[in-house]
Image 1: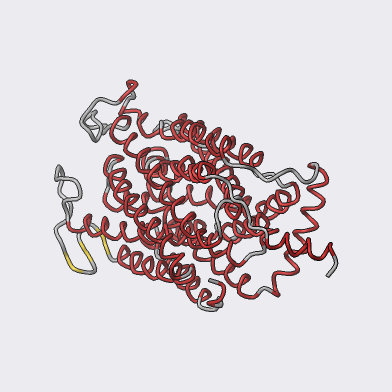
Image 2: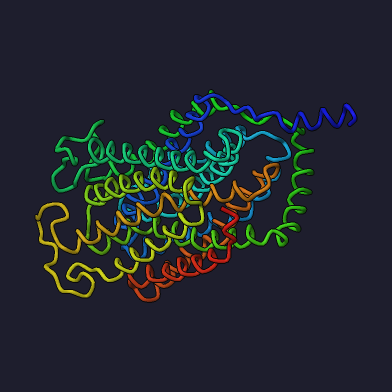
Length: 465
C-alpha cells in the first residue's frame, strides 16, 4: 500500500471535531431571536390588529395580508436556491444572516407607523411586512445550513427539536411581555395583568399592538448576538464574484442531479405542499379567530401564549421522537394531527361545536368561557403540538438525506419548496375569502394541502429516515 493511500485512509478515519457546547447554544438562540416575528407579527398581535383596525373590515384585511404574504413568498422561492448555492461556494454563512437579519429589523420597526383607521398606511405596512418576511426567511436558510457541523448525525433530531422549542419559549415570553405590560384593552385601559401600559402607550391608538414591530426588531438584535460571537462560521473559500459563478454552476448541477434522487425529490415536493398549508394556517389562525369570535388583542394574545406552550412541548418531544423513530414517522403523525385540528375548526362557530348547538359567547363573560371558544382553544393546542415537530423533523430529514457538501444549496431548495407555492395558500385563502365573503370558506382550502402532502410523503423511502 502506498504511503499516500495510507494517509488518505487515515484521514477518512479521523473523527470529526465538533465545536464546544457554547457554539450549539449560540446557534439555538437564533430561533429564540427570530421567533417573536412569527409570534407577534404574523400570528397573534400585528396581523389581527391590521385586519381588524387598519383594514376596512376583517375579511378585507385577511385578503390583503394574504396577498402580501404571497408576494414575499414568491421572492423567497425564486432567490433561496441561488443564495444557498452561492453560500456553499463562498463558505460563509454569517454575513448573509447579518444582511437579511437587517431587513427583518428594518421592516419590523416600520410597523409602528400603522395607525388605526388610516387607509394611507395600508400599502406601506404591507411593504414593510413583505421586507421583514423575506429577511427572516433568508436568514433562517443560512442558519439552518450551519447545523450539520455542530453535532453528530445521531443528535441532529434533538438539536432541531430543541431549537424549535427554544424559539417557541422566546415567542411565549415576548407575547407575555406585550400582553402583560404593553398592550391594553381600549375599553379598560389596562393590560392583561391589570396595569397601565408601560411607556405611556395609548390603548385608543393601539400603540400596544403597534409596539410589537419595534420590539421584534430589538429582540432579534439582542438575542442573535451569541450566534455571531460563539458559533463558528465556515471558512471563506472564494471571493464574492467567483463564489457567484461557482454557486450558479453548482446549483445547475444539483438541479440536474435531483431527478436521480427520487426520495429526496419527492420529499421536497411534499414539503412544498404541506409547508404551504402550515404557514397559511399560522398566518391566518389569529385573524380567523378574531373574525369568528371578535376576540380582542388580549384574548387572541392569551390564546397565543397557550398555543405556544403546546408547540414548545411538541417540538421538544418531537426532537426526541425524531432520533428514536425517524423523521418520516414524526412528519406523518404531525400531518394527521393537523388534519384533525383543521377539520374540527371548520365545524366551530360561536353557537356550534361539531354541528352541536351550544351557548354563544356572552358580553362581559370570563376569558374563553363559551364552549365554542374552549373547543377552538383545544384544537389550537393540537395545531401547536403538531406544528413544531413537523417543521423540526422536516429540516432534520433533509440533513439526513442531502449531500453534506451541498447542504446550503439543499436548504435553499428546501426554502424554495417551502416558498415556491407559498403564495398559493394565502392567495387561495384571500381569493376564496373575498369571493365568498366568508373567512371559513377561505380556511377550508387548507385541508387539501395537508392531504396532498401526506399522500406524497408515503412515497418517500423509509431508508431516508
